Length: 130
Image (cartoon, rainbow, N blue to C red; front, side):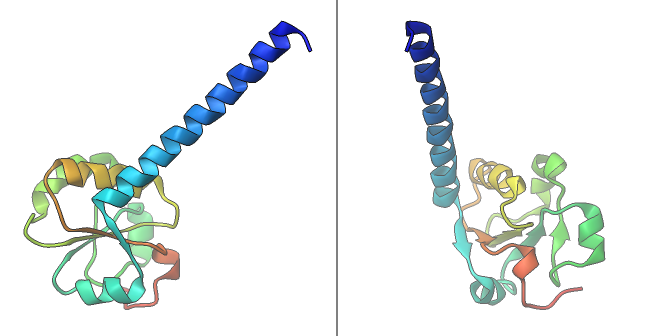
């Protein structure tokens, strides 16, 4: 193995480790800022919380959790004024969505402390819909 090949392998390994480290940091940052809950826990909190659907407006209009409001992630920061900090915020989106990863830190930075995420996503929701 030439020294150039060794340098290339080391460079690839460093890039992979950096990506894994960044992913782990992002994962734990989101887990510290929000509690991921199952369907039954989400249903218990619905009546006292603010339900936010982060999916596209088309998906929201097709079907959504009863009582939810649709906040597009692109305008999420601008929509925060419509939320009350003294009530829990319940977020949902499609499973493994980047919108959740973007919305949770914004809520934490804005001072929201009771943030919950539907862990199974809307696809596995078994409660009331509209």
